[in-house]
Image (cartoon, rainbow, N blue to C red; front, top):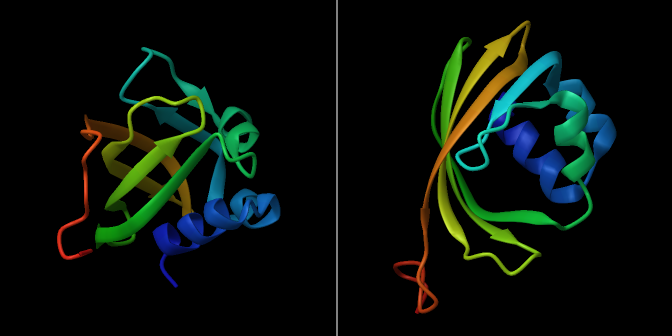
Amino acid sequence: MSIIEAYNEAWKNGNLEALDEVIHDDFIFNPHVGGVTMSKSDMMGFAGNDSVRSEHNRVLFENDEVGMAHSIVHFANGSTSEAVMSFIRFKDGKIISMETGATPLSDDYKLVGSE
């Protein structure tokens, strides 16, 4: 299983132990909104509480240094769901940084081929 796949699986299941294993202690997350930088502990605080959930997770590219992933993300606070692209860097076999870009989805969004 790739690092990104392990991260996605751990996030989906709210498995904090597995997330701790795949996220580097010096992890930095630069989300596409808010102008903030988050740490590993910030990210772990979101895990497993259903405030953010994703579906249709795809690994677009991954090697030992970097990865690209795409997913559809939904928010418990009622914000518009988004198509999110993530650029991920690895260090020592763990995720050291992640930066996202997103496109808000319309209310009538349907995944192509889902009907």
